[in-house]
Amino acid sequence: ETGVTQTPRHLVMGMTNKKSLKCEQHLGHNAMYWYKQSAKKPLELMFVYSLEERVENNSVPSRFSPECPNSSHLFLHLHTLQPEDSALYLCASSQVLDRAGYTFGSGTRLTVV
Amino acid sequence: EDQVTQSPEALRLQEGESSSLNCSYTVSGLRGLFWYRQDPGKGPEFLFTLYSAGEEKEKERLKATLTKKESFLHITAPKPEDSATYLCAVQAYNTDKLIFGTGTRLQVFP
Image 1 (cartoon, each protein chain N blue to C red):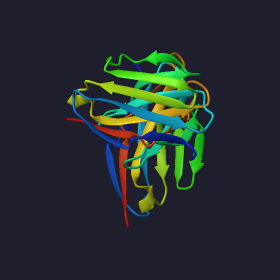
Image 2: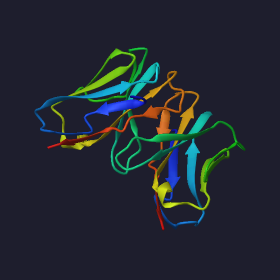
Image 3: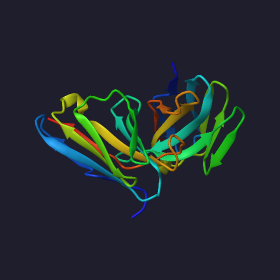
């Protein structure tokens, strides 16, 4: 499999649940990113990892917790989310930190009920 | 503050009817301007990077141009398969982060 793969594609969770989003890249890139995409809003950068080290946390609430165990995998752990957290969560990677064009995954459509 | 504004918000074209999408930006030192295409239910797909005013890039029916204040994505004789949301993003020297616009949703009818 090539490119950036995100699972699951769709997720519905209650506000008291704990779930995780997974991202895997098969491109040999060194940097990975989490973005949030809400309707009628620009993509919002959430977290940036370079060579498995977090280099940016863009004022994201602590109910979102990222994890990067190696340069190919990125997780976003979710707990006690709010309905306004419902959005499309996109993972991206780039060969070098902050050098585009980023390669995006297809995203996880998250609904918090 | 670095900012990206895309217009129009939505555009409906007949097949073969050429048009342009606009991306206006304000940034303190432009490192690069990027165009992406996003299909429903999918992540953005990289199209072009432009680095300096006067630069142009082409891919099939798409041509991107750049000035010091804006970029245009020209679509020549579009086909229904060109229907998508087109996103523009800028990268500034001082932050290195991509700043996205809200996109233009293009629909091309046969």
